Length: 299
Image (cartoon, rainbow, N blue to C red):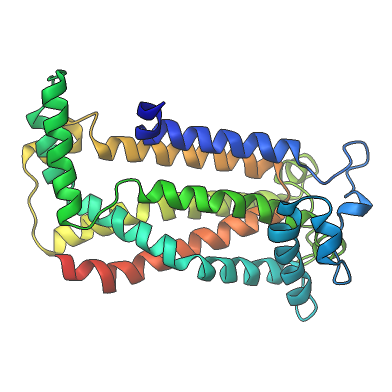
């Protein structure tokens, strides 16, 4: 079990799997009619007490998000409301996410040194070699104030938030009864494909593109820093010669995460594509801020 939690790829895949299962088991819609159950609908006059009676998650997480959506929608519309609330949620969790992204970018900056250590102990499977490799890596992390599992902490923090948004965007009265530029946000991209509503597919594809960009952006920034500083990688730092290095693991996690998000989003209401689209744009902006004000000093 301990080894499982040290394998970040397995842990990430496990987390996404649980997200899929919980979301599938907690749909607020009647499968026979496709409509939200009356007792699940959240309007401005819905009390927190009525939601707490259905469970702490509904009362503490879903109800506040849904009410924010309803409040903002009074002055705008359902789509703008989701965008504004998503930005507010991103701002509220910025302290955790920025720290995680700083750690991730510093990890990329130190990748050549990490690769050197991994190459030094390549093929050595005895306990002493494994312990020495772990100690050398830990010294690098400690020296540069890096928590290699920091990104996983943020993933677990975002886990209930994603489920909360998933529920809130389906149950908020403003979304159920409203629209964005005559687009029903309660319908799914797959529904849009089946009914020739190409705007649904366009928004879905736009979300996937920006998700990919947000995942790759730290790597692009790292390459640009190396180019600007005329950094030349040694052979041992080349990812092509280290198939099992951390960069390969991070890329695997990225592609698995992107694939799972795409599978979820195409079957989930379009409101979730809005959420992921705005979140990915916010992450790109955060990375630009981090690169300018947090990472530059470390070069």
